[in-house]
Amino acid sequence: PRVAIFSTGDEVTAPGEPLPPAGIYDANRFTLRALVAEQGGEVLDLGILPDDRDALIAALDGAANQADLVITSGGVSVGEADFTRAALAEIGELGFWRIAIRPGRPLACGRLGERGVPFLGLPGNPVAVMVTFLRFVAPLMARLQGRDAWQPATLTALAEHELKSRVGRVDYLRGIYRCDDRGRLTVASTGAQGSGILSSMVKANCLIELAADREVAAPGEAVTIHPLHRLP
Image (tube, rainbow, N blue to C red; front, top):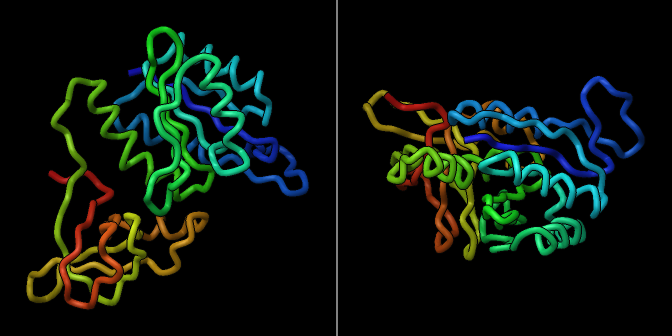
């Protein structure tokens, strides 16, 4: 499938350009380009858009005419989402906005244009972008390729230390799994889990999934993990 991607925000600056006060470099677009290509998609890179309703409407409309799937990063958090919701109301429909996961709560999903092209508005934080792509965009891309039964790889591992969550949401911790000297699969977190801490993904080889009804996983308890590399 052809996948259109762009970043949004007046503060977002292309790498190599001077960084203005309160500016941030655009890491998300390049992350998405790599992830889309890894999933077999053809990337249509639309660059960076300002916080402007008309510009967003024009970009989404153009993307819907060229792509099979449209992905944005940023512009969907509280206080920012008016642009995205207004644009979707103008040229499509918003299916849902905000889900009970961490990181990645401000995820928007809808359809664009007369063809009803799927749209996913991912959060602006780098780790949240990667987690929501792996858990939502990757399965959608598989369906667009006719692989309806595809699911991300899932394993069970034993927690090496206490893993905390919050009841009422699904937590995806970045983790490192390994085989211990007894042949058991174990997993530990990478450390600090803030959604802007890129190093938590750099160190990780899996996501640890803690269900919405689970507040803590004690050392030695079984947890669900999703490897970040492709399994044979």
